[in-house]
Image (cartoon, rainbow, N blue to C red; front, side, top):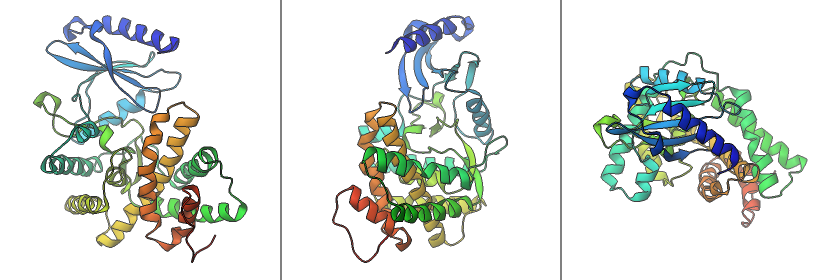
Length: 346
């Protein structure tokens, strides 16, 4: 832990000690709960007969107001999100209810029976349908320019920085056509509230009634109003957990049926819907390849590299199915040092 982190931790302890005695907080019980790809850190601490979560969001890097705003939108939609018990926006501290000690990802890694896995993912799909009925008031739009900008992370950080490959004009133009197609088609989808990382690390496994119903939902502060298939793509092509295509389709069909029953604006033809969420997953996973490479090279977080083969596999799954993406597949073949396929060119 660096000096700045030590100072933040001491400041957090001091703030916790100043909170009302009725919370029965033990500041000395503070222990790491989790961290994420941003500057935010989370700590668990004992309070009365249970535990609470303290958020440390350095105000120089993080703004806690979006968390407060989106938490309200999701709570109003009937979703299980942390209750905000205390908030000190000037210092970037927050005290939250505890939704449980393990995420879906952690429980999957520890081992779940298939029946339990399927039950919890049906819960997640039902929660997603409720989330997509939430208000989007006050949220920025996940529009075509923003989608297009995010795709640039792939050539900049994954292709050039991570693999040392400089694209010539021909290949860059071919990639740009694919990016234009993806960002335009995905931006044309009906807009709903988009969590942006609705996958196993951000879904809490709630075992106790005091934690609320499954799943508890966290890390939602970057929510936008955007494409309706985005969060489904996050869930079924999870960057941390490999789901084979038959499982992806099974969950997609279940979601599609739930969404139609809830009168959400999904395509009435499943084949067209399937293409829409696959193209959305391609957009998302190209961005993630760039993000994970950037986290390694710029931010000194090499742990994300372990997930790149999985994300690369999801990209290949979609790119190999549609001929319009063959130039991308050829670039991936070069990067992965696979035999170059014939029959298509840049």
